[in-house]
Image 1 (cartoon, rainbow, N blue to C red):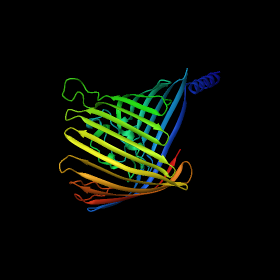
Image 2: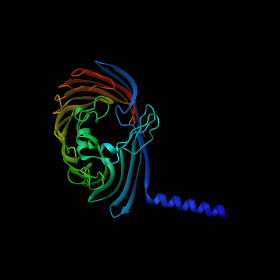
Image 3: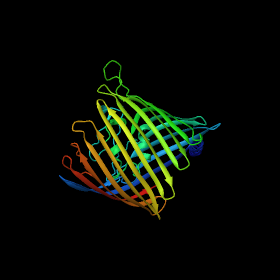
Image 4: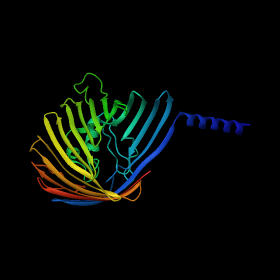
Length: 351
């Protein structure tokens, strides 16, 4: 009798869970041999995420009827070379940055941790998510801000904790049926007690709007994050033109962190060749910090798709520093105003 009751309870629970939502396990494992050369030292290592971010995630959706749905998304970084996860940030400030303990950093859902409600009116999304100001930098970069070829408009950016993601965010995304027009509004909280001069630290807001029509896709983003030491602004406009031989991308960025200004640009493209594609970009970023540092990067890469889920790739890049900049690639070190080069060779599998 007890066994029958237990079986019936388990069956009821399974049916209820099935009715509630569909849950998907997904991920990417991307291992990369990384070689870096600088004027001071070189480095060779096995790394991760040279083509696509290694990750492990869970997502699910429940149909609420009437065109509405509820969903969740939990996604964490995974270092393919050693199995570690990555630290996250709890309050969009330096005090909220978790330090990884060597060999002991577990999986955190640092990439995305959201719950959503969606309908014909759009989507309301709550939790840790990408910031609107980041999307133009990654979508319109031939290397998707990953690996040694990643655009210097993110590699040298001065905007800090909310440059790519924000915790404690409340966002709204327009529905996808607006004739190519798209947009996102996001506000995020630093969650500090009132009273101190730092009470608004980590609090911010951002907007991104764009239009995809025919071969053209262009978007603009503006943002502001508050800090007692000086507010941060991250603004950009970017786009791409798709034609018969591939697509060309471009970015223009204008940033501010307190009294320091930064500006950058990128021009690049992706060109299909057989079962793969050639990627190329030239990007630059400079700021008004002491010495007026400036870094320019040339990047070339090739991706060969073995299947829809598996690819091998190689990317080479070289940076040239000026104005006291010391940017170096793939863990190498270089002297003031010296150059550095790097090479990624990797294998990516998604599931």
